[in-house]
Every structure is written in C-alpha cells, then in structure tokens.
Figure (tube, rainbow, N blue to C red):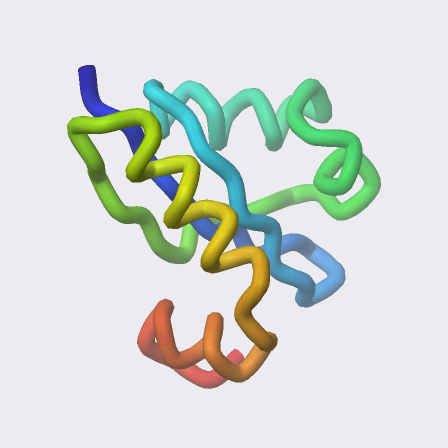
Length: 82
C-alpha cells in the first residue's frame, strides 16, 4: 500500500501538511469540508506537493519533520515562493 505525505495550500495562504493512503480522495475530502479541522475554515485547498512511501512509519516520520519546518523551508520544498 502506498503512503503519501502531502502539503496543501489553503485559501488564506497557509500550508497544511498531512498523511494518507489515498491522496486524491483525501484532497477531495478536505475540499468538501470533511477533512482536518484546520482546513475546514480555509477552503478551498490546493495540493501543492506530495511524497510517496511504501512504509507507513516512514511517511509519518516525514510528516512530522515537515510540520517542524519553517514557512520558508516549506516554500523551498514545494519549489516556489508563495
């Protein structure tokens, strides 16, 4: 099973980082207002970046590492200045 770590751009300009096994479905869920509490009031969201892992533990560790990054580091990761 594939595991994904992803970064969303929210309507207010903030980033949201998460983990899932079904990337397209998860982004759709966020945009339906049924995703994370953080994104519900910041719709719509746009998928900016993702990484794929075969191991769930690796994906969760990477998610935690990205969440600790500064805004600037996340912008560099997604490959653009927001």
